[in-house]
Image (tube, rainbow, N blue to C red; front, side, top):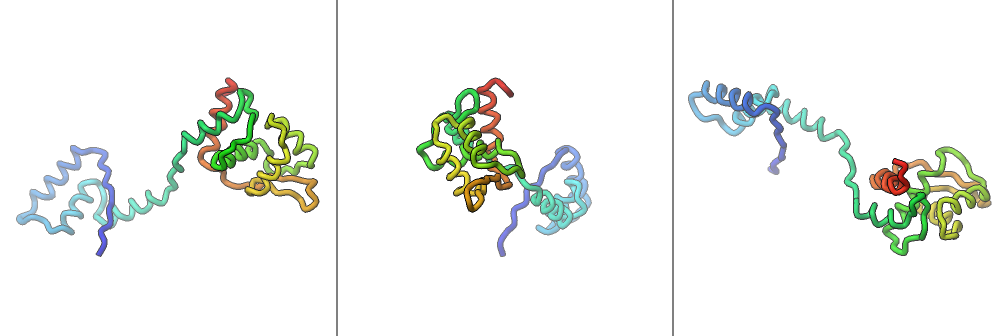
Amino acid sequence: MSREIHALTISDLSSFARALRESLGKREAPPSHVEMVNLLSKSAGYRNYQHFRAQEERRSEVPRPEPVDHDLIERVARHFDGAGVLMRWPAKNSLQPLCLWALWSRMEAGRTYPDAEMTALLNRWASFGDHALLRRALVSLGYAVRSKDGRIYRRIEQKPPAELSPLLRRVMRTQGAV
């Protein structure tokens, strides 16, 4: 049988020790393993071990924040100038998606963009002069959708990566706008 590992956090060690000492003092013989687990759980403020496990399972269901790759953020931030404009397209494929996420975040949710307006925006947001590359990349990576005739673009709503917010703050900090 495999063993489950549960972390026990004790907010007041003194009251925990006192409750455990009192429980052990009432016993004539040393407790069995199951009895000891129940005594520890009760001393920590739970009704018994099952109550402790149920509470731990509820806590583990709470979503934890995603880890953020700060090195990636710094490498991508170097591609933006002080005004938040993408100066150059990264040669490394691993940096390109986060650059596109930064552009995606500037598009309004639910709004459609005619081709000419999308071109103008991409030329404003990127100074290296290849709006077609950016449009294709936004569409091919699934950040935007293009109509069949290529005249209309729309941002696809989805959860951005954990690195997007810190990147935007980093880029804005270089602007002095945070």
